[in-house]
Image: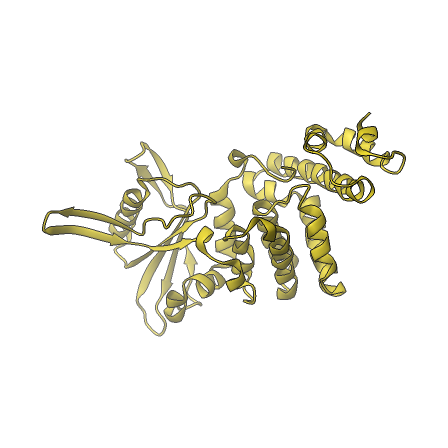
Length: 321
């Protein structure tokens, strides 16, 4: 797959934390409407990294996101604990209860626990509570609010002018045939929000990370893009180009200069690959899996040489000869 990054190279928790910290109020509006209704939006405070030893796994645990806020028209504070779960783990509800207990003990404030299940599979409904019980006697029944993205329908969020929804649509329930359409719609929604460049690029980087298209999907993406009004299309193309040039995803993942350098290099390689595939598909037809594999294996220098030969050859085979 042309645009697929190896799973281990993506710091999912960091990407989600960056998105939710930037658009927390909008996230609540779209996905936690009950909290949004009583949240004093002027009182939001993101607590510093909260780290403690996770005795269940024998390692240090760093909270994904802890928010301190007031209830509207009250001086009473509460916490919102948001955990992103990027892989399915059978013991997660028990660990979530452990995290909740430690924060509750430390801060002595009411806590609203939220879990975002962001993995692609499995799609079956995931747990939303941890139960400790004996026959005829329930000791503890701990509930947490669940947002399981792969069970949400992207069309339900399409008409919401909400940046958090625009980003998270990329992780929702999407039929294979709709992937190019959804990517266009995500970018189009970003374009209509008219955010500042930095926040627009953050959302675009999130969408590009989780909705990377393969060689067969790119032509359909371009056809969908052709249906977009010209002014919106210009903004969408700019968002894509800026993300490629800046290597924004790698920069977010690594959080250091080495990561940003790798991101810029990867961005230039992706741009060259996409150019070759777009023009080559128009000239020679859809490439074979072997051709796509050759492109993926090529370094930037070789890709640039291949691109220069596109107009000189008659088919994919000659391009690589």
